[in-house]
Length: 370
Image 1: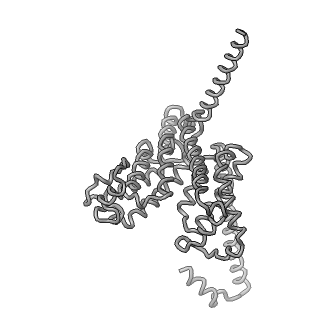
Image 2 (image 1 turned 90 degrees about the horizontal axis):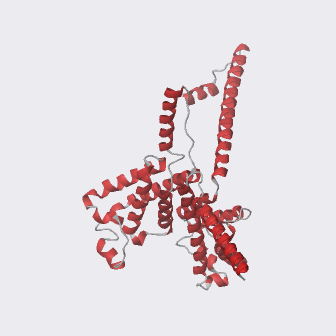
Image 3 (image 1 turned 180 degrees about the horizontal axis):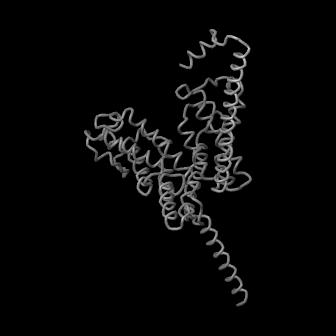
């Protein structure tokens, strides 16, 4: 009996140790921050665009006499703890603070001073959204989620001006001390892994509960949900009313959407299924952009899929691009040079044969060049 109890105890301890090891590897195994660098760039571009759009009607969105004046917001969300620095910005400084925020987001996108700008990005994004809650939609929520999780990891360690400047300083130092140009490699980081995992897990949660919440509506059970969205003239970008004559299309897309959202969290972790599920997601969000006009939301959702691409794959893709692009550019230059030389040879030959090359066509060509 004692031996049996000892064997059970040892087996349980071994299982718990394996679970702890796998948990640690899943969340904290050091990872190349290249994926975070790519995510920072695309997220930063979307943040810059979004906040420039805020500025189109800045006083209407954030001003004291705008669409959502402070009294209205406090009445709508009386017990909210949502914080925003805009509550403390005087009206006379509205535009100054806005352009400072846009400038900070530009620096964040370029990867400059990311020790500071990576934390400024979520602070700015959340402050705009909380100040104007009635204008806060899915795009703003995903922007805030990406900005916050990217701030946790070293998102400026690669593909950034910070990295370029560090390489320059290290290269100059090594050239002076050792007589050769040498820059240190970027070390894998456990916080890079954590940041990536948080985005991945958050997307699984979003899709699962999006699917569950859809089941509350009858339209997602009877297959009419997609038709109702496509026939809504408020969002309709293209006329798809012809689907009314083919209801099976709406049925198929409606039920496929539910199945995909509710099983995303299962199959996206399986290497064989991951590309298929991500491709379905890309097609779905591109469709949302094309047919419902929600391009920014569709794009930012697709951007989150970059977190599921291993940094090794991104690195190989970068190396392939570095090989292909210069070759194509060189080929284009050679072709253009050959055509230019051919034209010169043809013109010289014509002159040797006594042909008039200063006719109307030639004059027109010279006039266009001028």
